[in-house]
Amino acid sequence: MTATRVLVLNSGSSSVKYQLLDMRDSARLAVGLVERIGEETSRLKHTPLTGGGAESREREEPIADHEAALKAVAEELAADGLGLDSPELAAIGHRVVHGGLRFSAPTVVTDEVLAEIERLVPVAPLHNPANITGIRTAQALRPDLPQVAVFDTAFHTTMPESAARYAIDVKTADEHRVRRYGFHGTSHAYVSRETAKLLGKAPEDVNVIVLHLGNGASASAVRGGRCVDTSMGLTPLEGLVMGTRSGDLDPAVIFHLARVGGMSVDEIDVLLNKKSGLIGLCGDNDMREIRRRVDEGDQEAALAFEIYIHRLKKYIGAYYAVLGRVDAVVFTAGVGENAAPVREAAVAGLEELGLAVDGALNSVRSDEARLISPEYARVAVAVVPTDEELEIANQTYALVGNPSAP
Image (tube, rainbow, N blue to C red):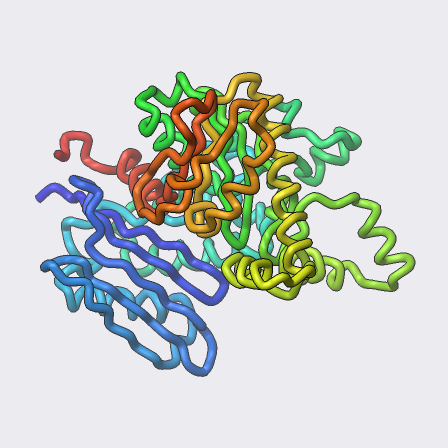
């Protein structure tokens, strides 16, 4: 029997998201989420997608750690005849946030690879430890199965040094691995490729500005299928205004808060990552709630929205200059796919750059990739739903799957 299934795992500090896919037709067989791992009451929501139904099952019980979480996931999959012991399972693909410069492609996990991911923990302290835990747990459950790491940073390793280097002392930067790495890479890779398909062109023939707008947000400039610049840097803090992160900031603000404000490094870290961005500006990080407040005349929410849009416009303009020629600006992720006012406002006033949004097309809600620009627009504006799990599965199966499989 040819193994054609891939289990995708996204392990967070207290959660595990998962999807099981059949790579013959990219069909999802099951999806689920385990959350509040290690708390008094944990929750597992599992949805089988075979047999013509999609009725979810939920469990609320103590789940002590990631090993217990994956064992619970395995039980749910087995109940649907999709167990981890199935000979149809080809590999397990893991989302790993930080791969540094070494990992520019999906990689089969070995002891050496795992050690390198651990060495990158100082530059991804919130993410890599949880990713490592997920890998080790999956290895224990299926030691015979290939475990594949797919890195958020990999797509951005094609950036030229002029974009990736910060203008600080080179020796210091190299010693401490300080440079722009970028994140959301699986999303930017998938969306830029799907945008080319939407335009009826090959990826190598298209220049695209991708705006991944969720609670975390990032922009990328993609020339001919290769990333040449991206907004996130050493960490996911740099760049666009986000739900709880500040994005771009004068570095001296940190010194000022320490010296004048008496804040510790840890306090500033929490401030910039968890108490800034939209929530810091207006107390909400849900764009739907912010827009509701704006429509009701709330000035605080209106200013937060204007700041958010202003930063978006700056990156669109900057990346237009970097690319020289732009074929499409594409919106993706939760806000990008669903918030029509964000898309309209981000493009408004950029007509001289060939950008425009058709109001009727922009207002349509759809799960499909689509153009929202008028026919006369020189540059296409698109909405392309992202699918990071499918991208991870595709990369995993391309690496370890049977090349003769249908």
